[in-house]
Every structure is written in structure tokens, then in C-alpha cells.
Image 1: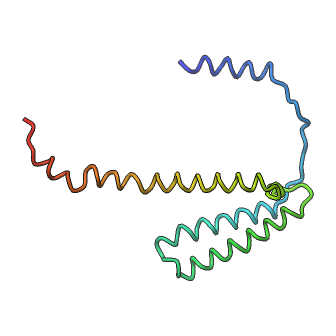
Image 2: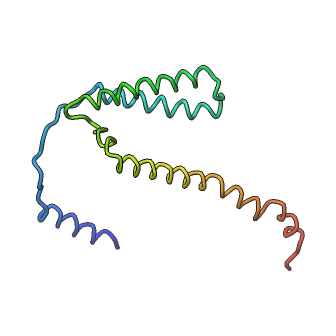
Image 3: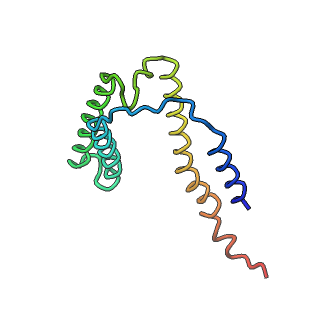
Length: 139
């Protein structure tokens, strides 16, 4: 039922929409790509391993330090490039910095609620009272 609308939309897009910007071929900065991949992968790995190995594990500490160093180099490189992959100069505007911080805090609150509330709700709903309701026979 959705497929006919999809086909009409694709045909309309190819026949009616025009490219409004010039196609450019920017130079790919491979060092920045490698730095961001290594930095963010190390950060994710250190946080993931911290739950199993503990925060004082040498592997967790080493990965976290590696992530901080590589991401600092990545940020420095992006600020110095004429055409960066990720333009971090936008954080020099106070309104943007405040808005981005508020979005991060909001996302953290949402994730915390998502992980903390369901177990608490499950315990309150089905925890100590489940035996009381299970002992009643409704037939």
C-alpha cells in the first residue's frame, strides 16, 4: 500500500528537483578521519570495559587516556584546518555552546530515565506484590 506512493515520490524527485548548490570535490583529510575513529573508538571501549574490569583497570585507564590525547589532537587539527571535517569554531558562540550543553544534559536525563525507571516500575508492579496476586485463583 505504501509502495505506489514511494514510486510516485521517487519519480517526482528525479524529474522535478534540481541541485541548487555547486558540486565540490573537497580534499579528504585522512589523518583527521583516523584521529576521530581512534579517539572515539578508544572512548567507547574504555567506558564499555569499565563495567566489566572496573575503573581502576590498567586497560580502561590506558584506553581513556589514549582517547583524551587523540581527541585533543583531533580538535586542535580541526581548529587549525582551513576546511575542517567538523567545524568546531561554532562552539565559540556562547548561545550555541549553551544550547548544545542543554541538549546533552536533556539527552542524559532521558537515557537515565530510560534505564532506571523500567526496573523500578517492574519491581513496584510485579515485585513484592506478585505473590499476593499469584495466590488468588480467578476460576
